[in-house]
Image (cartoon, rainbow over all chains, first blue to last red; front, top):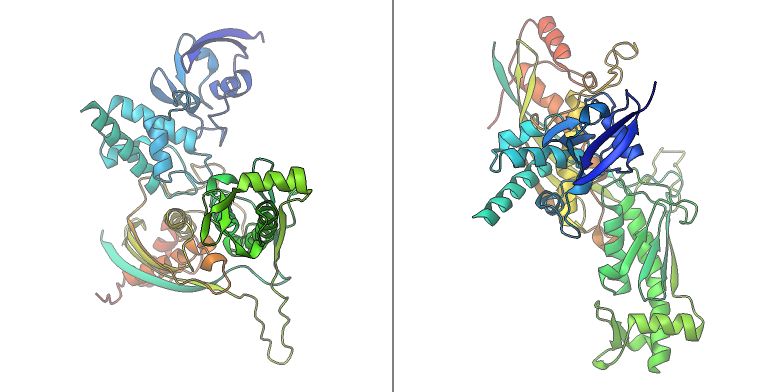
Length: 160
Length: 341
């Protein structure tokens, strides 16, 4: 089948690519555009490591077709840092030892960003719900939950 | 429907490494022309902190700032031989090898500095900030960088060191069967508080409380990270994970994360950890390391807590709701055991 043109914003830059009709957003971002932050895990939407934001909403890159992203704004963990300055979530993940092997981290960060963007002051339960679709083998989740709560608090303090 | 409370505990003595063939680790340390050091290892860092701990040990032994040490792992083409990252051996075996290598490299570094300063190398000390000076005379000094450059561009020396840690192979005594497979043990005790629903077989973990003795905690926050995360890996083995739920029948194995279960962020419970530091005589700076022991005591503690809650002994893992319901049916209902305060 003929390849199709798709245009969207990736971390603030306009991108235009040709994709297969059945190509996933994860495949386009990684192989087509060379952004390897979102990871390929289970490939069927059960582990969360491919989580990216589409117009601010968390989406599973492995289950999202690229052709449905025409004109949308995509965010990945690669776009979180501002030059050498880490995003508050990234800094909090470091401070709280929220990564060991690091494979779940890009997905956790994006799920957390989606939460904090719509709810700057979440409860612990809301944080747990926000990352409930993301599997982590190493950390026992506790440091990740603490990091997200700390990042929210820090952003709150900056606004005040 | 009743949710029965249960408490279980487990204690372990856990061997650091396994000396069935000497269990060697090697390290190579060398200075680069900028006066910074590279530590070459073949031990793998899977996120548990092997690189960080090796870096701390190398910097401490060399007497240089930690920023000036780079650890290169996981390239078995260029790194020296290592048995690997397993058996809770990394900190102990690799750390000891790094100390030996770093000591030798430090010796060459001080020789080079002594030649430049025209003093005896035995009189030199490092300040840990990148300087070498005569003991008691801080003004008679040279930077590590200048000494490294003098060695490499003037004196014709490589500032390098080789290290190996090898425990002599322990043979089995044919009379008694005795052997000494390990030289260091770590210890732990863990208590699990949980509740078991006698209608659904569901187990909810409410709290873990543990004490770990693992030599000196060379990096206390990484130790804590290991213990917090590892406990939930243990919990996953105790209550969730298996590729063959009806082993030896291979059917009904999980094919994805909908069927192969792991704890999610909503399943975790508070874990109160006490780390007891008793430096090990043969450990690097007294360290033994948490290793596999993070996960292991959780499994028997959970089985004991379930027995305490409902009076059934489940002796295969994981302890699924199905196994609990079948056991309760066979027993004719829950029989909560005595619970001591």
